[in-house]
Amino acid sequence: MDRKAITTAPNKPIHDPSPSMWDVFLGDMKALMRELKQQLKPLVVWLLVMDKNGARRRTTILITGGFLLWITLALLSHPLGSGTDPLVMQLIQKLFEPDVLRRALILWLALWLGVQLSAFYLDDVFELENLRAARRFIWSSVFTGRFPKFTIRDGDMVEEGLDSSVAKIGGPAWVDLHLENAALFEMIEGSPHVVSPANRSAVLLDGFERLRAVVDLRDQVIELTVDGRTQDGIPVTAKDVRVVYSIDRGGEEPGDVRDSKSYPFSEDALLHLVYNHGIDPLFDAMQRLIRSELVKFISHHTLSEFLTNANVGESPRQFIPRDEITDQFYDYEREFSKSAERHGVRLEWIGVGTWTTPAEIILDRHLDAWKISAESRQRRSEPELDGTLRQSWLEEMLRLVDEVPGVYYQLVNQELTSEQIMRRLVLTYREKLRNARDLYYQTGQPVPPELVIVIRHLSRMAAIQVEDSE
Image 1 (spheres, rainbow, N blue to C red):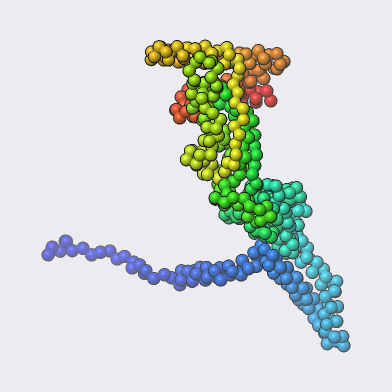
Image 2 (image 1 turned 90 degrees about the vertical axis):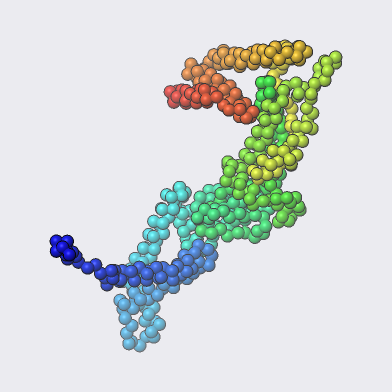
């Protein structure tokens, strides 16, 4: 073997894999602290829970601890002697010594200062603007256990509860719910808590459990006016549309008003309404559904299908009776019923009202369009029919454009400033374009990008003019 090939490894320090005593000590301390936290957690929850029993425990601990501390201060400052007075009388005398009372007063002031600082914190965080209400909330929830009580009636909190600390901070508080309401509260961690009429007595809310929404379980009535355009571009207005609706009742029917189940409802429907709609979730959901369905129905039919035959000698056209319009809302196989169930609402009754269209449009312009359409059907010529449709489309576009100058002359006569007139003209143009965009949505056609760009540009112009006027 070649001696040159034999090399010796350099001396390296040998690494000891065993931890040091300090590392072992730190690891044991961490494990001890984790175990101590686990053992103390039930005690902390037992002591700090914000319910009636927790408040009583804290009050007992405060009074007992304060009295024992007072006795300790008295005995440390003035030990009991061996006089002739009984020990009880000596202890009472020591308790009311001036220096002992001064020390006890300092402790009491510390407690009062802590409550004051906590009240300032609550008042600032929850924007109460009522320091007295914040102090009352702390004393009632932490010590006394005399929680406030508020009532929910007719779909809302009664007036005396609207400005209270409960409305902004939350529980602990008692809530008295009338039979016609259901309320959704949110725990401090965000989980929902539904309070229903099945709770016959008042319900105690947990600490910082806040009211999210109240839903009236009774049948509701709304009146709507819905604007749309027919398949041939004619504006149609449905006036005095009356709707009777309610929250989805989960397949049950209302019973006796004196019963806790007089207004059944689905909790899933309540959660969907609250978390997917506006301030008035039930009204908001049903109004959107009715408007969408009527606008869609109008856009899928021509104007002649809404009107009766005026000429005796003319062959009858296809006519849609009112029953067919209302039946589409009750047919469970149609999209409206499925959408209503998904949104958590139920339609009880609908009256489609009176459907009107601008009289001058029909008399002056669209009688000619009907005549052209009839002649095209007689000729059965597809090129001529396409030309007629395009001519009608161009005439309708020209009419829509001509409406805006007419609006200008009306605004000039109203003695408005030039900035106000310009802004209203911009808004008028934007409204026409938005109607065209909605028609694309309703017919399922893609919206041209140029239309979206122009609408955004007009919206920015209107906003800039508002800022300039200010």
